[in-house]
Length: 112
Length: 109
Image 1 (tube, rainbow over the protein chains, first blue to last red):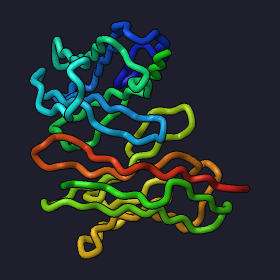
Image 2 (cartoon, rainbow over the protein chains, first blue to last red):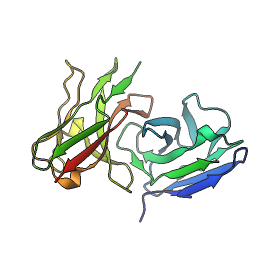
Image 3 (tube, rainbow over the protein chains, first blue to last red):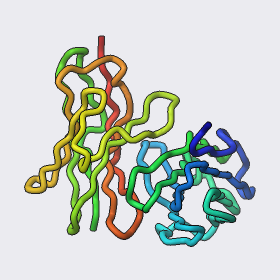
């Protein structure tokens, strides 16, 4: 019944590794997002996709590559992980862009 | 540039006392504002939005365009209100939410 689900919930990995976080929504929304919450709990948008098309890329390093195979999925792949990538990553979706956004439970990424 | 400011990082009040979480925004267009809440170990969820002018869990928020504010208020705080609260601004046509820094509200018994 979960509306927006992310996997994994926790991810601990070494510097330099490549990892992916998956996100799926079953709400039929046309827009999906990735947000990053840093250690100070500050939430910032990274990417926004509308109908599988990238519409927002907020000056995120190109080590981060989102992929949207269909409207219901938006995955985040991160290459060459750095210590500063440690954060909680939230996937979200909405219908019509600026309407109410539904968030996943977050993925806590720890780079050691 | 669009910006949302929540001046209080931490706010602590006693149960039964009034609560006000401050939010100010900077945006040249017509603002669409939200309050999101994150309870302990739960996902971020919408609390209320300014266009619906509703009261959720006793909370209200009024958009004041003159003061560019959207403060969240509740007359009598309850312990279950303890959470992280985020004010957010939807950018028209840009399809994104700009969040404030968040305010951690703690209700003391």
